[in-house]
Length: 553
View (cartoon, rainbow, N blue to C red):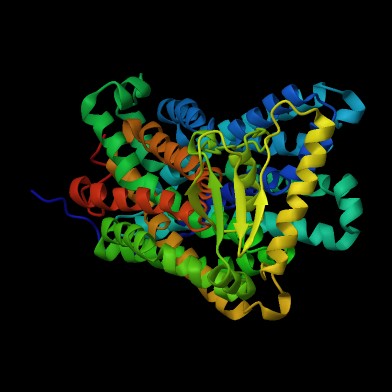
């Protein structure tokens, strides 16, 4: 017999408080998390500059890993706590860990003051941030969903979905405002600490509000009936009936959602600044405007999913991304840097190299040194945002770059002293830069030719795709799992998808670009994953909007 649900009703004051408190805290967690990424270059100079090359590499790798790779472990640890002791207290702990870790980064002495202890403490704080974020999202989404009346879960949890975008927006605005007020030199010296330090105020507000909240009704009901899980990890991942849903949630939902999310917000910004050479301040403002325009669509698609279902909206977002990314990013090039688009069409660039000398340049930390003539040539061109074609050379022959009719011989840095390698590198880069300039390749986007309106339109479209895949997904993940293991089960696929599939997108895409030569080929990574999620999700994921989450205990 079908479950009879009460008709949807207006939001109560208590529900408004739940959504506001959960969303506000999660905005601040994302704000804290993004600060490090946005200020990574300055932080590296403050904390890693005094280390030898080997140690700097290790610390850079740890910093990278802490930001993304540890998130699933936080999901497992805090998810287990959330299913055993409750949602409220668990995500109260996560926000305290995140907030205090962020504040301490703001007051942490740099390498010049306390030596190697500085990067060690920084990495420990970054690990804590990653773990805390891994526990926060599942708690907030579960908490809000379990407070939501049937027929409103998509709309209510969509507010949680806005938080990552709002956190990114808030971090960009605070950084931009601080930079503008005190100047670039002061910001690089000490001003970068301000956004970290002010986060303690945000933490105080969030903790105060969360302390006044009640435990979720679904968890209270389950606890009263003595049905809480004694071993949520074993139930979630040790029993096939639940593990298969976790795997399907990962490959049929969150992997595609993650790459669309990172492409629409992070990779779009990366592409504007790195590939199209738009200055960082302008690019940040253009992205911020598109986020402001697009963010309400999280609520639109969350609410729509209550009426037509979660699955069709998420699958449509993945499909549109897979079909339109190439033409959309091509249009973005013409709108943001038309001189680059014209030069690419007029003067082809060809790298002639022995294929055995060419490696796949996956370099997430930016500290790997490539020494073969092929790798050096491709790295220089990729760094200059130049698309090129590949041609074979005789075995053992040094690589060369042909720009229009000009041929520039490459070199290998193997066996060279650091001084000679630096000299060769400077000469080679100058020769390439001079030839590119002669062929019409711009060193940066011309602000006078930047079509800001069209760029914002394109970026807004990318953000709307993000809202399609991300708006309904919290409700769907909550509805896929029983109450007793919900926090644990939904958190892991979410954070593997977003921490690993999404977090690795920029570096993987850049490696593909450097390997193949085409500045658009990095898009194959999100396109293939989004397409795979569309196929798997369409075939194997069941619609969940009519699930009674109180019955699933």
